[in-house]
Image (cartoon, rainbow, N blue to C red; front, side, top):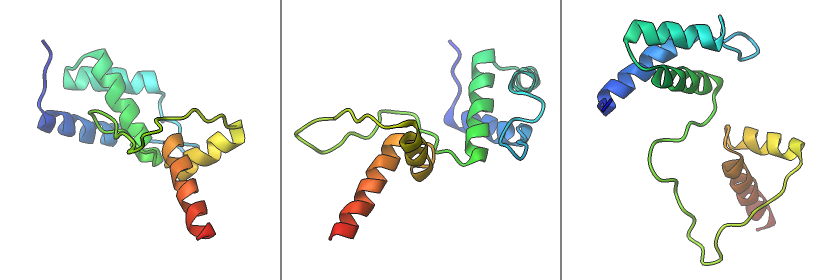
Length: 118
């Protein structure tokens, strides 16, 4: 089984951040495929791990929120989760507010509205 420690994962992510360069539009310079293949060969890791690390490093450099490993935080409500339908423009705005996480953006916007209403 292919197991690595948290320290090794963190070191690989740090190396991926150094390997990934973004242009002014936020695209990976040299292309995603070329970078993850080079990273895979350089660090002798699986293609899946290389793709994940390069993708994660690019998201971090773009300023997107990257979910940490483990179970997501659950809401403290007896009513349960709800489905909300948003327009594409609202999804984009919520993603900006939530730093890449649409649900977090909606929650933050609601908190702001709640505070404004007093």
